[in-house]
Amino acid sequence: MTRDALYRAYDGLRPSDAARERMLQAVKEAAAHPETEEHPKRRTFRRSLLLAAALGLIVAFGSVAYATGWFGLRSAVMYHDNGDPDQPYGNTDVMSLQGLAGSPEFEANARWQAFYDSYDPDGAILASIGNSDTGLEPRYDAYPCYTREMADTLDAIAEESGLELLSGLTLYGAAELPDWMRNTLPQSCGAFDHCIYDAYSFDNGSFMTEGAFFFCDARWPYETNYQFVCNRKGYLSVSYLAIGDADDYTQWEYETASGVTVTLALGPDKALIIADLPDAYLVVNVLDVRVGDVQQGEAALPAEILEAMADAFRFDQLA
Figure (cartoon, helix red, strand yellow):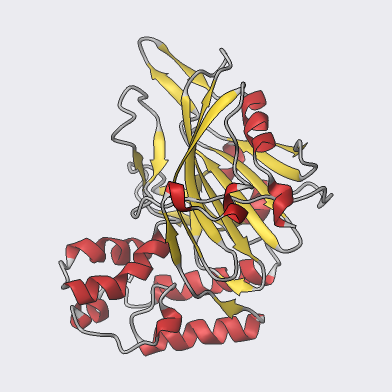
């Protein structure tokens, strides 16, 4: 069964409340890498894209003055998905949200994705389970596993890679964020306003968050949404991000105001802020990088605004 099929199965099978709870964790994981679609509340921006976070989650984090050395976006791509070219990100490079190529976290996720794509390709096994309990232990709740074979494969990949499994999911509303999260997020100032939506985190400190900037700069006076994903190293995460063609991005190295060296990548429909820290791998997925329409003309996110966004995060707080 493919990743997209499992994602759609959550609603398509119309399971009972008990089964929906069992599958909830799989959807939460899928929320980090679902199909990209137009945000219904951004109708005035023809090409505004918001990665569908199915559960409406959010959070934030930071780093310090680490000279990790510049790396290209290609070094974060796990594989190419030859999907439907007529769909948004249907034919796309797929980026790891765990680390760069060669890292245990990157390679473990790539192994899991290869297995997952070849397992239950027609969805027959999942359909046969239906509303029934899979019998899997809670330790697999953070992963899209629905058979013992899948759980055993996940365990084998984690063990052979020297990684632990994620556990202890906690959901937060915007007003409920713990200080250790809030202190790493952008704070409204004279240059921009900032809002937080919701968030989730795991016991190890991995998390995902969504928020938005409202810049006062006349060069970019538009709402700009983002997703912030932090994956702690030493753990197996199976999230990923469709990015289109990695070669279409303008990329450069940048040192943020908090002294963290990041890679910035500005593409046709999104931008990325990437920090590879000693203990965590951070990705900020910036949406709404193009606004306007054919008649009025389109505006593209300036590189200086992307740098200002990177400066606003306290990545140094993660060290």
